[in-house]
Length: 506
Ligand SMILES: Nc1ncnc2c1ncn2[C@@H]1O[C@H](COP(=O)(O)OP(=O)(O)O)[C@@H](O)[C@H]1O
Ligand SMILES: Nc1ccn([C@@H]2O[C@H](COP(=O)(O)O)[C@@H](O)[C@H]2O)c(=O)n1
Image (tube, rainbow, N blue to C red; front, side, top):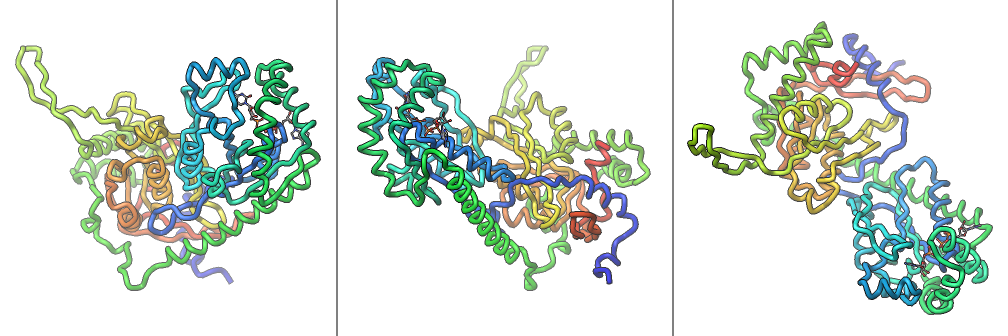
């Protein structure tokens, strides 16, 4: 007996269903990290690895990453990145092997802990880059965001309470001191531009005393002691533990989300909410010209070139409309006839973030309206099994990646349709994690379903949504299972215009 929904499948949707199905990537990505209120829930899993210099900490960290394999969002954070910025006097000492890089005071622990805390809380962080050959922190930083697992490693990774408090698993790599010294000589000569004599000098003066005074005693905080050689079995056990922890967390998380999104019988069905009742939805004036554009877009017999032409025309219009919400300053200019003219100018930083791939046509519109805008992209897809949104890739413009700029930047979030808004919610969450102000986000779309808009409004009341049209119905259609894929339900806007990305890009 077929599930009842199969009976409600409409023939007209069949072509669309096939396209949707072919489009889904069977790839691993980042599941939602926020709850029903749009706020982050849970945390990334943090592993701290300490041990003497050249004991094999980096090796252990890399092996764990390799073992975890299919989880793409694992990052290694090294304590070396957080060596303090040195004064010219300190640098001079460093080049003579007279600076103590092994003392806890040489590390900027507050910065280390702050970056780690941000990453653990799913926020973005810009990590300093350190050069061993220059003995100095470089000017550039490395942008990190979105890891489910963070592995930190460093000789003093377990020394400080602030750091220890952030770890979910603490590891100490215990290695024979002769082996550590031999490895260090080999490595520092080959990779860090040192001489054997210099390495030995530094070892006796600073490395060994510090190991005895600070590093070795921190082993008492470890949950697991791992040998510095022949440690494959230990690493495999640790990897299994991390995998299990993540599975448990994901299960707990899904439980919370499932309970949270269950329809509440006491509130009205959002699909019946009138468009006028959605406070932040701004539908552009429905002029005859606009109706004409939408008639062509909705017509399934429209030729592709005609469809593209009309989407492009509409995109320009929508972006112009979105610009009305960005504050404009006053500017006085002199005209060619020598008269002053009091006008307006937009000197605010505006960037675009396209939800791939349907947001692409709107990005083109943005490029026509604004000169050289910075535009980034997010690849979000529905997981084939659970149907939940999965973040597969994020490439954001620098103005968002740097928190201080993100806080003053206006963002046009571009997606062709708001259906359930699952991908929209994830995209907004990514922007907020980077410090973008909620009221600086303008979601630009071609077609919106009131239900999706209602959810976005509820979670993020300060976001404005600019749409060309809103269609009242969301109809479930059933995608039959095939091979590994289970049968499942997806929602389509009606009357709608089909899958805009597919019709635009083929
Ligand atoms: N389990 C191991 N077996 C063999 N060689 C190892 C092992 N762990 C580390 N090494 C080697 O020792 C050197 C230092 O290791 P590394 O992981 O960089 O140490 P650390 O990060 O503790 O300073 C590297 O050349 C590495 O290849
Ligand atoms: N400019 C620097 C900074 C640090 N060191 C040494 O690096 C060791 C820590 O790195 P590991 O990869 O070995 O954990 C530490 O013992 C410092 O002496 C350096 O030589 N020069």
